[in-house]
Length: 110
Image 1: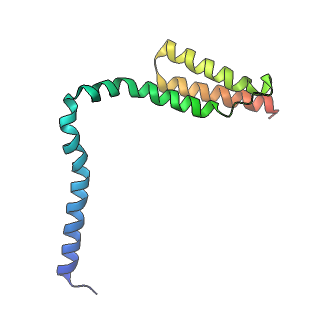
Image 2: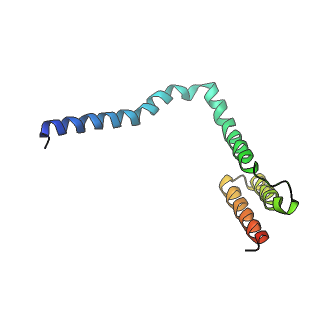
């Protein structure tokens, strides 16, 4: 059994490291709030991330049959149209996903 002094030292070091690691991002990012580059990236990155996710998702669209590609095409059209109309990413992604699952299930006969 370790002595209480050793346990207290280990707990103190662990607490200091945990606090430091949690505080470090705020200390490092504070000077960047005034950066023009960070401001530009904060405006452009959401669109870039969505384009990458869309490309990654649509890479598996079957091209041998129009019927097999139908759920993908309709879901993307619904998602884009709904997002342009409502400007709500959560709603457009959720509804697009539901449309895709419903069409894929219906076409699979389930």
